Amino acid sequence: MPAPAQPARLYPVTVMDNVEVYRVGNEAVITLQPSTGYVSVVCAWHDELNGAHYWAHLGPGSLRGFLLVLNRSYVVDKLFGRKSTEEFDQDATVQALRAAIIEQRREARESVRGGMTAQEARDLWDEVDNVERADDVANLRGIDEPWYYIRTRDKACVAWFWNSVWASFIAHLRSTAVPA
Image 1 (tube, rainbow, N blue to C red):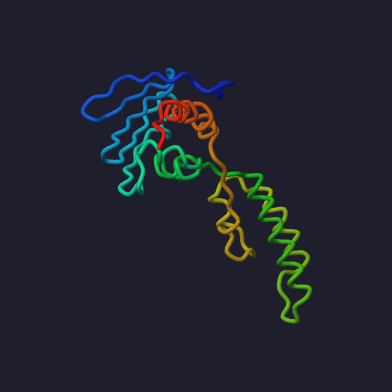
Image 2: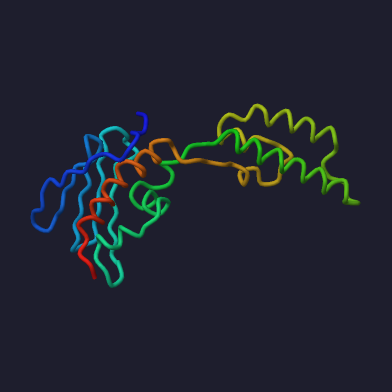
């Protein structure tokens, strides 16, 4: 689903038994339980964007105030888990592997012990072209700790969630915040 041009409209649905429920457009439902620090998100469009977290230690402020200062990475990690919201970045991984080959070849030329030959570097360079998945990186021979060079990126739905759903929710919290 493409990201909306602007944040979705937020509709406070209900407050009952100290639980606040918000509908963000037709995209998501966010539930807060301020007394316990519990937050949940249910997103109709992306299974990986269904999650919850319990913040036991909010500091001196309220749950609402705490949520206002959180950054994208922290919110996504806590609510959904990093593994479900990231995907393998083939281009960045290939670039990192090629930089490692160049560095290992440079070190080999400067070392008296030898190391990677020019032909081994060429063969490995060509083999890197076949990397399509993170699992392919583990099969590369000649690169020290190849898994170190695996790169990931946020799935497109994460940017959509942050820029549309979460932005609308946070804008509502700001507009209804009680000055300290």
